[in-house]
Image 1: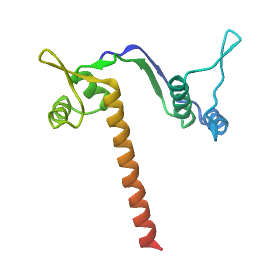
Image 2: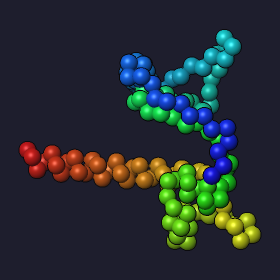
Image 3: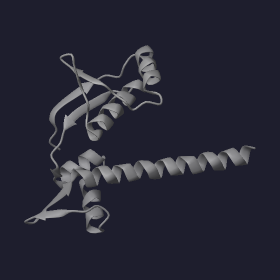
Length: 139
């Protein structure tokens, strides 16, 4: 996958992560200062900054990069953390929308991100169901 200008940053030390986590609790209002001037971020940029800060607050290492809007199947598979073959099979089944450029498949970044979000929601629901089942069995 072509990552444009990748930047890796290690997780914050525990004390700093905890301070950041406390500051973020209950607030998604992020003020950005550039050369002493306050700038309001559009909602997508604000959401990305909040997500980045939230990851830091959990002590996670973070990689920030840019990606092209239309991805090859190889790029999309790498971004999703799945094999190229599995992704192609999903596009064949219509689970992920695909566009063709001649005979080459292209997948919108938004489609992969939506699929990843759905995977997270599914995993969260499974976790919650297991918690509920385990909690009622031990009560």
